[in-house]
Length: 86
Image (cartoon, rainbow, N blue to C red; front, side, top):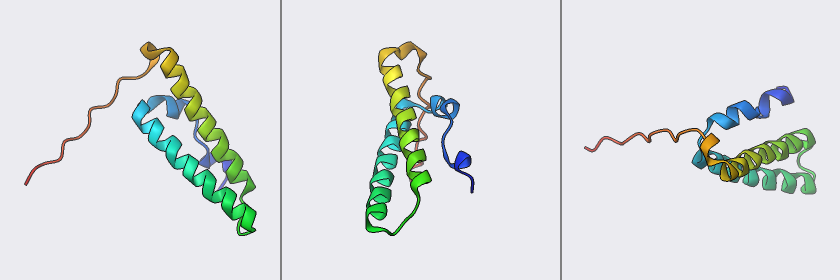
């Protein structure tokens, strides 16, 4: 798999709502921790993946900060699906 395919594009990130971006940022942070731990133990040689993860997180955090400064440019939050009761 190429590294370009795994990294997220800024256009795709901008389409997501802020809650989803926060969840993805937390997931990426955890994934970053695990990769760094594996690298320090010598179990993994995924340096390119680590770089891409760091860049993706930076993109997400940048877009979140931009939305904080300019809330009018943020997309409308998508309506949440309701679960059917039994």
